[in-house]
Structure formats: C-alpha cells, structure tokens
Length: 289
Ligand SMILES: NC(=O)C1=CN([C@@H]2O[C@H](COP(=O)(O)OP(=O)(O)OC[C@H]3O[C@@H](n4cnc5c(N)ncnc54)[C@H](OP(=O)(O)O)[C@@H]3O)[C@@H](O)[C@H]2O)C=CC1
Ligand SMILES: Cc1cn([C@H]2C[C@H](O)[C@@H](COP(=O)(O)OP(=O)(O)O[C@H]3O[C@@H](C)C(=O)[C@@H](O)[C@H]3O)O2)c(=O)[nH]c1=O
Image (cartoon, rainbow, N blue to C red; front, side, top):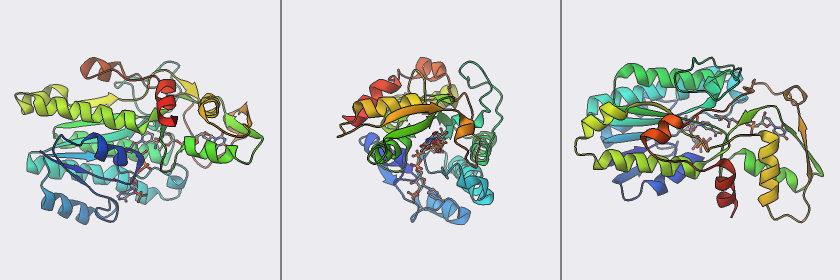
C-alpha cells in the first residue's frame, strides 16, 4: 500500500511518518514538495504518486493570523482537502483528514459529540469546517479525525511556549476558563496507524471503509484548562526555578481570534470502533519523559 502523508514537518505529520512505518510505502512530503495553497500542484503531485491512501495533517494552524489571512486559510484548510478527496476518489484511494474542536462555539455544557451542530467562532475553525464538508461532499472512503490542543516536543505548541516562558518569568498568567483535552501528537499518529493497520488487514477493504468511514473525535481522555495544563507541564519539568501559575479569565488575555469556552469533545465513538486512548496527564508525562 502506498501512503501519501502531507505536512511532514508539522507535529502530527512528523509523528505519522514514524507511526506508519511497516504499514506500506510511506511518501511523506513537506510544504516545499506539496503546497496546499497551490491547488494545481496538489493535484499534480497526487496524480504522479498515485497513493492508495492520503493522510492529511498539513493545515494552516495559526489561529490568530487566520483572522487576517482568510483567503489563504480557506484555501489550505477548506479547499485543498476537497481537492485531495476528489483525486483520491478518481484513484480508488481513501483519505484520512484531521480537524479541530474549534468547529464548535464552546457553548455546550457537556462534551461535544460528532452529531452536534457546528458553529465556528473564528476563521481557522470555519476554514477547518469547510475542509470537513468538502471531503464529505465527494463521497470518497474517508475518516475525519477531530482533535484538540495538540502538543509535542517539537514544532510550535503550548507546551513549548510554557517551557520557554518559564525560563525567565516568576509568574505565568494563563486562561483558566477554557476547557479541553491536551493531546500529544504521538497519540494521534499511533491511533491513526492502529486504524490504518485495521483497514489493511480487513479481508474486504471496501466493506471495511463502507462500515467505518465518517467523522470521529480523537483526543486524550479527561479534561483540564490551559491553566491546569500549564501546572501539569511545570510539575513534570525539571527547572532550576518554577514560576507560579495564575488562572485568569479569557477577557484578561485578549487575542484577535475568539476561542471556545468548552473544547471538550467526546471520543466514545472512536473508542468503541477502534481502540482506547490515554488520559491527557498520562500522555503528557510520557511526552516529557
Ligand atoms: N495544533 C493544534 O493544536 C491542533 C491541530 N489540529 C489539526 O490537526 C492537524 C495537524 O496539526 P499539527 O500537526 O498540530 O499542526 P502544525 O502546525 O504542527 O503543522 C502543520 C503543518 O502543515 C504545514 N502547512 C501549513 N501550510 C501549508 C501549506 N500551504 N502547504 C503545505 N503544508 C502546509 C506546515 O508546514 P511548515 O512546517 O512549512 O509550516 C506544518 O508542517 C491539522 O489538521 C490541524 O488543523 C486540530 C486541533 C488542534
Ligand atoms: C502564551 C499564553 C497563552 N494563553 C492562552 C491563550 C489561549 O486562550 C490559550 C492557548 O493559546 P494558543 O494560542 O497556544 O492556543 P491556540 O492556538 O488557540 O490552540 C489551538 O490551536 C488550533 C490549531 C486548534 O485546532 C485548537 O485545538 C487549539 O489547540 O492560552 C494565556 O492565557 N497566557 C499565555 O501566556
């Protein structure tokens, strides 16, 4: 099986290249080899490689910048996934795509399930929702995996921001009224590999995709706030001196893009269909080990 992975320098893309080893011929590309803002290039690269499966973690993820780069965010997150799905369909291939908790407005008081209505409150969320809908409209075998608050030991993420700020600050003032599940990028890549292995070992691949295709939530289990996440990061870290953490309200940390208050998404559907998931604090410890 030939597997095309996009965005190989990103957090999830980097881990996917490792997690998918042994499941087929992995062709992992970075932005310079396949730029999702160049739809003609995307089409040509897919036609040249002719993958059996496209795994697409590449995305425009700069949440605040997206508010002013609307057209670019929409092309990369909204249009390119639809084009990839279209090309996959022509090849008889399947596509696995990632989306976000930011497709919701965060007003629900319990975890969001896959059938809950979406209502993004920022451009990034709207662009990711457009990508989901574009794939769903094509009628190709697909999995859309919505995740949240992704971190790892490389790239740009909240964990590394906290460790950097901790070096020269006595106090970290962090939002404590947004709730979600921090998710290690390796949890996402390993779970994806588990699913791909299951699909590959099915006696009738088409029946497997027919049965399993669709939208799933994939995050670590349990929930916290950004302030709670910060406390846990600092507790695991070995530092000469640790700053105190003060939980503040969203209004006290104004940013260009709005964030949902409740970002917790239920993973029951994925757990029942595929495999279990670690709790966010277990995974964080492993990541920081
Ligand atoms: N990060 C998070 O907190 C969350 C992410 N997600 C989703 O999970 C998926 C994986 O995210 P994650 O790995 O964390 O994201 P990262 O920001 O770590 O990586 C994104 C990757 O996409 C690449 N990329 C950006 N623009 C383009 C482009 N025009 N063409 C090709 N590649 C491009 C980046 O390239 P370069 O390295 O050159 O910049 C980078 O390698 C995405 O779909 C994201 O929307 C969902 C919830 C939370
Ligand atoms: C650095 C810092 C951030 N914050 C707040 C701002 C924000 O509400 C929260 C998280 O900040 P960030 O800007 O890192 O997070 P953000 O970019 O909003 O993260 C999101 O990224 C996209 C890609 C997703 O899909 C989401 O699931 C989510 O992970 O922490 C503080 O309160 N104090 C601080 O010192």
